[in-house]
Image (cartoon, rainbow, N blue to C red; front, side, top):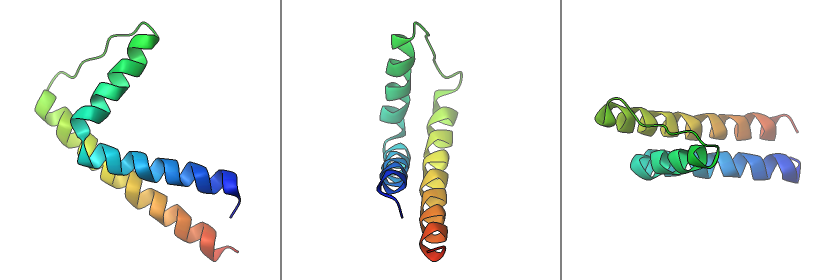
Length: 75
């Protein structure tokens, strides 16, 4: 696997773990990034947003691992 793809995959994997483990901090990071672009974002339902962020983090981890597996078998 090429180093660029491997680095990108590891980044996605780490961000997925971060979002799944610390959804509040992940949302705060997104809000900070959007504030730099002069956008204010806030969840309508905080509890639901935390749950959704956690689920999407787990999904990102699973997809990253699946892509690593597919790339590994293609070589």
